[in-house]
Length: 347
Image: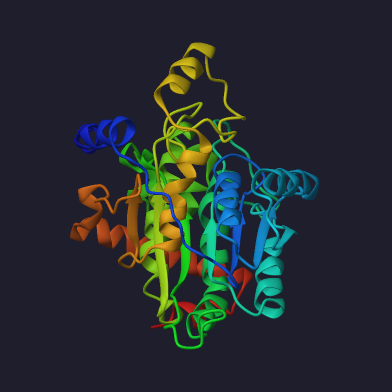
């Protein structure tokens, strides 16, 4: 509770007084991908990127029909003249994540930035075909796996010359994970378990499924910090970005009017109050765009277009030890489905 109370002044300052930074960058010749980009914040990020003139923009979505509709929306709003492709990616399937990453690494000449935005917020227990609690797999296990598997292409791109400018220094590639200030509320009741992920995947040990989203976003911070340590992340900017926006429920990637709360039963008066208090998905996407285009320290937490301190306990020895334990357990999960990740995490 102390962590949450300490965050209240930051929240009100950002929500009502901070001006969000837009970008005027020219992305000519560059390639970007956005996961979960058929709606909400992800679609907002894709629209902003399209306005900055990249050569190739990839919408990574679970439903190709919805992705096609998003593509039409982007073109209509931006008159985008570059190449806009829709690629299938189901974050609830490790096989789909591997197939997607392989397609990136084998078919793309470059990847200048990846916005790992896909996420869910469920208030009931559901499992994937891979046998994991759905929020844990989509928000964390699949997100971390995808981030690692994209590192080789991101790093290789960071060594290329600036598109169409032979004399310019190569710009760093970016890997941005959508986090949430909900981590300030995370109870993370499984953190003392001998095997944390095993406990998180046991319905009998789940004390409050509504905390799972908050905890998953704390683990997103862990992912950004740990992925940034990979030798394959040298030359790649890795961060976690979020903003409180107009949302239908507490703390998604911000208090934002998106569809992340579509699976929740939220009273109409709560929705009405939330809509009055917050920004649009397009405004909210500006913080993710900031993380995707600006130089930031390794594993930085970006809130409302500003590098911000995460919960203070996450930087203590106890907090860092917990982060290392969760990461180690995740690596073991990934090794079982994608043995090549061991080369990506070995320092």
